[in-house]
Length: 111
Image (cartoon, rainbow, N blue to C red; front, side, top):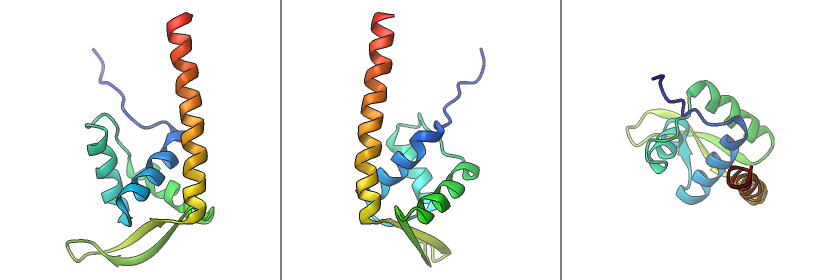
């Protein structure tokens, strides 16, 4: 039996990051990945190679803002927080996710 793949789909990463920052407040990248993993009961994993480009894109889009600060272990890190534009985008992403999962669920039940 092959290893179960639990990498996050590309389109859901923004949703998960925005939700994490909205619910938990400002965080550095590693803390975001840990929170997503813990919050999903270890079912989801975000790789650094996916997270940091996504954070950069979201920052360019104005959904999050980053500034240099210190981690809880006094290490320098970029700390990200959600912006008002990011909160609006979170609502859009949530709605899209709900429609997608409803459609997939219907197909699984009725196909």
